[in-house]
Length: 164
Image (cartoon, rainbow, N blue to C red; front, side, top):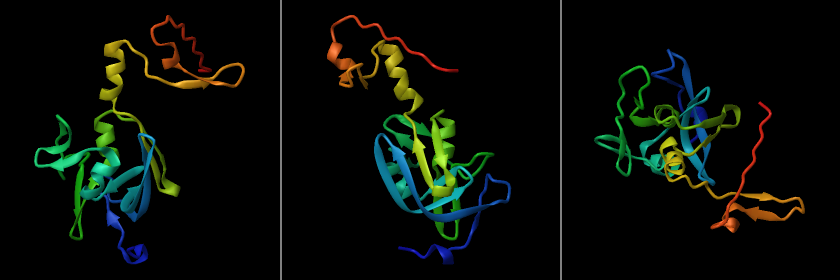
């Protein structure tokens, strides 16, 4: 493992001259935990080496951009919110920048170097188009876990409540 204390701080292209901190990071996505040995962070932004991009996001870096199946997002080092950054002979990809472009929810705990990526908005849209609710499980009044799929083929009334 690389000694990060010897690794120089890098200037973030989209961070207006502020520094990025190198070191390990953890990403949670689709109920999976991905431990990264090398990452750059700036506040809640996360940059990874392109080789780690498929493990972290499912996307691959191709000539046309960051791609997941037929979906490709152009990736360059230019513009106000670049997805690529080259520093000291290494290339870095902005995971949180990609999430912003795709309206993907991201929760970060920068001081612990942990990021959680929500499902892509495009994936959630399939539930609306099909009018079928995603499966989930909750305890009933007796404490037994009940899954929505247990009622497949039956009429179900879902009642939700939120404090806001």
